[in-house]
Length: 604
Image (cartoon, rainbow, N blue to C red; front, side, top):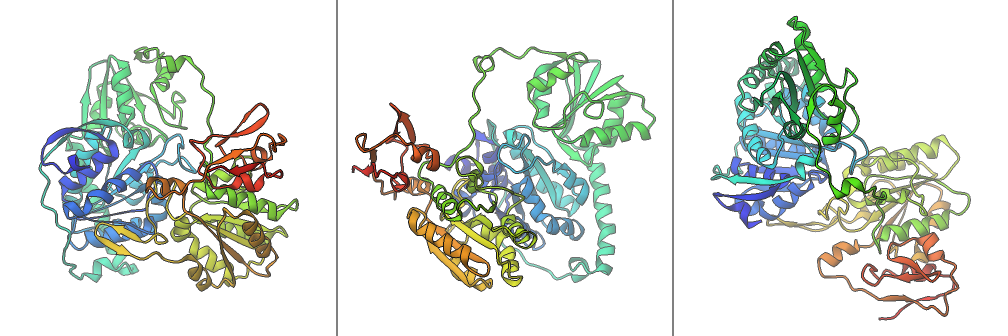
């Protein structure tokens, strides 16, 4: 991390690390986020270095709060940055849409990290539509070097237009590595002065109508800047033309021969004059872009409005897919139209590897929670409403503790709906960070409306685990020179109007089972806080007190209940009897409690 603080040099950086360096060089004074893959590493870097460079950084309670914090800084004359994964912008969209009307006084950049192919998300979503929806300029980097440079350019553009600017990345760009040249950072300013101007900043209808005209004027200026921007350029030679953006450019540049490529780095508003001239110079143009035909539709519009007869190939013509991220393999669909280089043969390409579904880690307290909950619910069963986080993996057998997932915080609202719309018991699972993020309104609703068949289990593993162990209000803050105490969940739950609240350690399976049974029998919404720190976090901190368990081969009868019902990945089979892998076992003791023969014992 120290290398990121240098004034010069050339270093190898992850795309997300390059984005953090871009913030330093741009003199960004305030940054805020809610962690979400593929953007998480940006926060990890800022967590380490923000106070060293004079930047204020926070993990906000959710994305809309991050947007609001950054917006307040930007209207106070401080350069600011809000960043999130693609679905996070859905959460922040209410503030985002109004901010486009209000405008900014210092540069404000919003990064949306899209996840084509849904590597770690609940949906595939093309956030280029948010640029069009909010009439906000957008840049799309292709490499780590461009990530850094476009962050700096986005701040400059924001200040020219007095508008927030979107930077859209994708998983492959965030997680690629490349050489990045460091330049001397601009002076950091993290304190400004807010000058009151309610006629523009308070969006009552009369003011918003005037702001709307300002918004349209800003995007018209952005259109002219896009046409002269060096981020939009032509490379290569050939009779055929390609229009592309983002990581798709790398595939086109490397694998397509004899074609001229119009690369769009400043992709919204589209550089209409450049596109028009490019179309007029070609008989055929192929638009290569991931996910939705956003650029293709604009290119077709420009061609139609200007009477250009160039053949346009892309998703609308049926040549390229809309689903999932692209790769060199995707370009094979264009082999009959363009000259495609053969992809180098690799050993990996010649072997069909088995799929490896994600599973809960060895010793994960969520496994114990799911096991005890299912045992308490019994054969009668329940509707299991889950949420976004590690505990979504409860969908895997043998737990099968997930029947519906919509978005962050939705488990409580959907459970309330099932409680009223059916006669079935509804059990909701939500993590501690997710509860603070979006679960509290749903719980207030459940208490207020007396959703009596609802049981909520808050899986408090003392961290925001799935995205890399970031802090949340329940863990307190100890970074950037600021400290705050942890916010206790149980009193907060009671303040939401819930009468039945119990905190249980899920490693004690019998206590967990008893608590769930009591909650199911309670006349009213009931909440259990299943509290045990993530063992991987404790291990990383050097605080894990590990017990060594072994299977007594004499006592074991080979029933394999520990495998079939508890299914910890530290368990395997040898000679028809379970075996514990000492290197991966955390020592939670769950398998020992499950074993009917008491054949699993502590040996050390």
